[in-house]
Image (cartoon, rainbow, N blue to C red):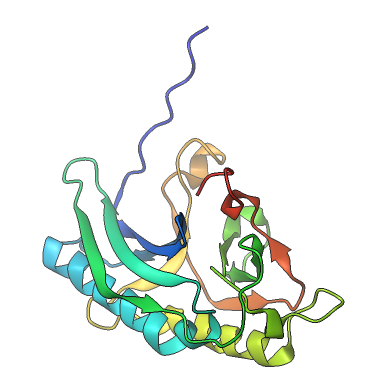
Length: 209
């Protein structure tokens, strides 16, 4: 039986930014989407990557344990006619600045993106790449201090790309949602960071990235 072919994403105004982290021999990836009118050049994608790294260093790094380090960032434009891809190595690696032993690699908090519209199609999420043991209580809830810090840091991502005039949003990949939503982009208007510890199973040994 022939499997259906999933169409490629196609919105030349949208760029996928991926931050790649390393913890021992494992690699974790957090991705999000930004849009600018008029498409992208290689220089603009490179600038957006620089802005993303700066956002991590200024807003999130100090909340993440030292076992986790940002080692690379990538930008990919969803334009099949001119598929720009830019990769930037972070050297030296940007190591987390939070003291204390890191929890198991699957232990995380969720940064939930909201757009002001109802339904799962209009929400996104990113998993924090690491949590320090001092920030988790015995009832598996995150300390209010770390939740507040991550909430402020997440909100800063909405205005993190002034050099290219791009906005953060939810991208609707083709083939995953009803046809009218294919390749659409919905602007993120806020974040919700709950204090309940989450789990990202793919970060456990042998489970994938």
